[in-house]
Amino acid sequence: MLESYVRLYLREEVRAEGLVRNLPGFARFLPVAALHHGQVVNISGIARDCGVARATVQGYLDILEDTLLAFRLPAFQPRLRARERRHPKLYWVDPGLVRAVKRLHGPIAPEERGALLEGWVLHLLRAHGEQGGLFDALHYWAPHPANRTEVDFLLRRDSELAAIEVKSQPRYHTGMLPGLRAIAALPGIARRVLVYGGKRSFRTGDGIDVWPVARLQQALAEGTLWP
Image 1 (cartoon, one colour):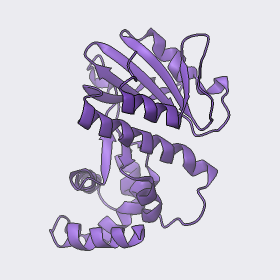
Image 2 (cartoon, rainbow, N blue to C red; image 1 turned 30 degrees about the vertical axis):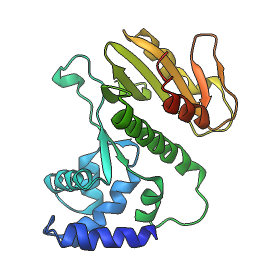
Image 3 (cartoon, rainbow, N blue to C red; image 1 turned 90 degrees about the vertical axis):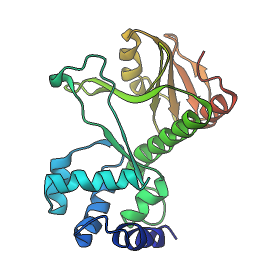
Image 4 (cartoon, one colour; image 1 turned 60 degrees about the vertical axis):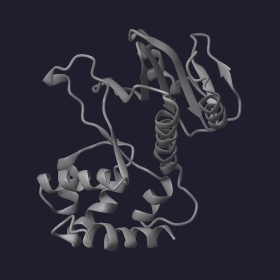
């Protein structure tokens, strides 16, 4: 059904509306873009893999976002210096659609789980943001690219910040926490949450909430994400 949706999208949204001049090139671009789900946008790499120009890839990404199939999550940049700028991350709007575009069937492979869950949580946050005013701005945080310190989502509401890291593994371990521990020094941090694939909720000794996915859903539904 999802693969049929992709074909319908190409036929009705892209070709019929004349959104691109080179439909075969755009069709080659889609699975390459799906491979970058949950990753920092690398326009040069995508252009090389699908055999089109960088400017063309930029236009294709705009089309994905304009037709509501994908979303680019900006990096948090408190100081807007050119050398500190980070590229956005690319997320498709549905994990099933990501797999359909890549023509993957059957059980989800372990290496897929992290990005698929991360993307699903992102759009859960976006839905509550649009409907309930959950945040004023949404970013990811990656201040030190050299050592890969990163937090998946950073929500800002007024002067407060909430950091959320997503891990698909069912067992908690402290190796999941470097980003959330590093971000504690950022001014305005009101809550740090690790969302993981386990079933137990608890708080670490340094104040990080560890929640199953269902606990995050509950907090969003009840409006208790912010302390």
